[in-house]
Length: 343
Image 1: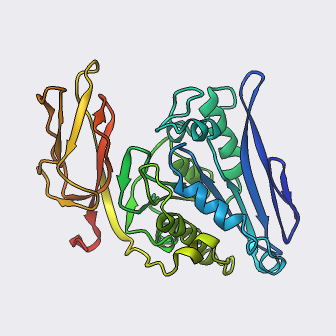
Image 2: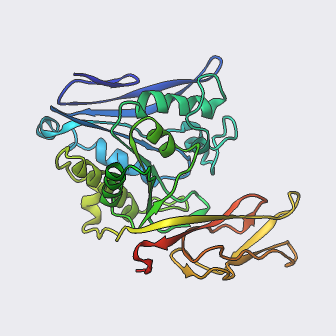
Image 3: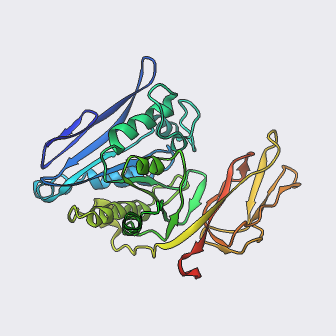
């Protein structure tokens, strides 16, 4: 049976590339690059997106290395693969081209907050609708590859949801841990890719490696290794290492310590004031509830905000730029570690 995404049509035992066209405005089409790998044997479907945010580069770099390699297109690899893989290589092309932080410049919206989207909405909503209906629908597992944005550092983590179905939730944990990140964060995020994938019947997994606009080989390789780990966990077979993984060499997977709660902190300053953010903690810091996390100052050093930790937790991401606006993220904490003990 052929597998198709946009213009990419792969017969059994083959790989195809092409474009998913989305009419993002009347008379305007956005072309999203896609790849389809159709195994020679029946099996599950893995759907993947990368580049939801234009300045998060490790995911697109990892997929290009992993899925477009000569080894991935080898006839033996394709014949032995059980099931299929469909992926977007740059889900928000306008944001990628503009090196945009957080939002799609076509409409100023965060593409990862408008799912499941709308066929008649704004540009981001139309892209979200196309991804939900043409990529997520019919998938067994969905991966969304991210990094810290151009202004963010992070400690590698995976995000999954728990539904109350014990067997399904255990499966989500196993798949999440197959990625090999430092943290396994439990929580639902309405309007996001992974929550929509869950609603459509797939297990949704958010994968975060790297950040700050860098394309660090280690984090690109860990993204690629994480995808291969999920492929193996799904029973699709042993997918060949990507060139970036071979170049980096031995990779040590993270402990995937489960975190059962999270807290986001945002700037709360006058809307017409430019804030100056001075964090007092770093990525991976473990903090106590009530601990001072830094301060947002005015231009002359006056203190506008002194955020404190609302929970005991670990800093999983941190905005590292000095500039800060009202409502912008400052950092996020993951809390309630499995077993009550920090690694």
